[in-house]
Length: 192
Image (cartoon, rainbow, N blue to C red; front, side, top):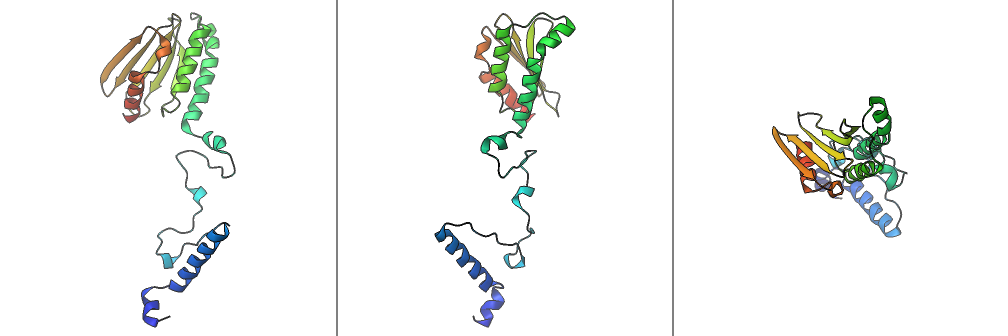
């Protein structure tokens, strides 16, 4: 190799050999070896395994299936807690001597919880003094919240206080939830 070329491109020969090794490995359908980070690639990062970079709070399991990797996502963490609260609602009703919650109302609440799993804010699920199930979404950083009430009579209501503005909607049939209004209020709550 010409001396002037080697001064302009340090590590040119090494890079060429590694490139040829990659091409050979691709044609042979075997795994490509990892290139170490070094000065010759002018990398600002040292060798760091990809597993060291986390995606939010999600644990990375290189060997698990796709379903297993979803187990640590924030929405699945809150859905388990919300469903546990919903399943224990009869105990709260008995403790506080509240009106009984019908099975149909619990089923509608469960349907809404599953439909809202993509929401980043976890709801609190509790019974009210009027025999309703409350799904209460509160912003962790702002004084904003969204409250969904499901009554034993099959009706529902959604109350929203986001960015200093009150909004509400009433529903004759709770099975319509979550609708466009509820989804829009929860998006605004997440952005607040």
